[in-house]
Image (cartoon, rainbow, N blue to C red; front, side, top):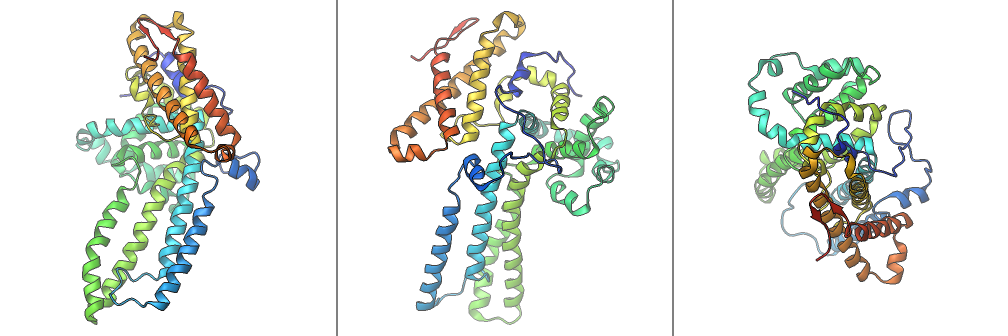
Length: 409
């Protein structure tokens, strides 16, 4: 069920980016930021100026409220939410999205957490292919849910457990519980029950997610909310005594549920892995569990971070730098490669090379559009990342690898 190949495969080096310090942990298992000052927060955040958007929302609310006082609404409202509630929900959603962006950056920059995310992302395609057969097997469908058992072992409160377990069903959890915990728990006794539950749950949640932005629950609620709008507007317009309070209550509940799921599902996806207390051992277990699958799908190794993008945030810059550095290290050590892997290695090199060059080109385009003061406002570590990527791009143009010659035409 799970691969047990040669664990020295050079493909596994992809999961261990060079020059990345393993961050310390807080007592609750989350990543510790050495300097917790606000200055450090702004320097490490991919979008350090996001509070300015909250100020803009405040100004927009003030202007909107003044206009409504001077020009009262003549048509029924779309929802029963007050103006302050609408702008408040937008502000909370924006703040949560920015925290999610920070957590995403930390996960992708950490070699151990990135291993977990990469494995979980690759399982989405696999689960799509096997879930129909899995759901017909009694060992996964007719057994006691293992997630409840893990909750008791880990000592997790019910509400904390529910918050992170509602995104996948028991069958998905049971499958990955059997595939990972039952096969490797004895070999890795130092991984706690809480870490096992976090690992299995994150993989199950990600594998079952129907899209890349993890808002599948919110989409269904949005459909119900949209369909309720014309009926609620008609009831308020006609002042129907029975339907008006009922539809008002339904709309308000759907509105808050939509925003809650819209915020919580993507937020918890990136915040949850940071609670691992022994993430290094979890990453080692995953490397062993999926060693053969790792060595047979070179491009799949790079699927967890979309490098074919114009995004030049710190997360993208970091992963681009790590992978371009990996290619250079890989090509410098061709003598140690096994001949049967040469073709797959070429795929990895070509993929990393083209992705690195594309991000480098986007960096050049972005820099050319910046004024001097705009470029100076970018955090120093971002500018350093950009310069290292551009340097690696030059080195990659002269790389020779078994039967290919990389270069800019």
